[in-house]
Image (cartoon, rainbow, N blue to C red; front, top):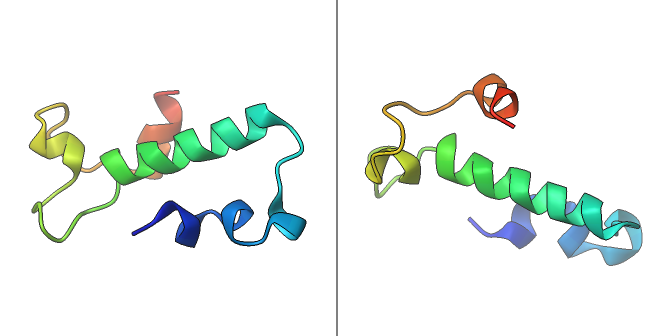
Length: 68
């Protein structure tokens, strides 16, 4: 999974370009948090946060957004 595949602002700059640097930073941060806490990786038997011992279960999007 690559950041370019899932964030449209990196694939088509003319249509999805962030006008503010803060918006771009927020989108990238949310994507990385989703990858680390919510998305089940096939090679890890869970999420990277579970493998690191940070959490014991994959988070839902509601849990992720509440933690911010």
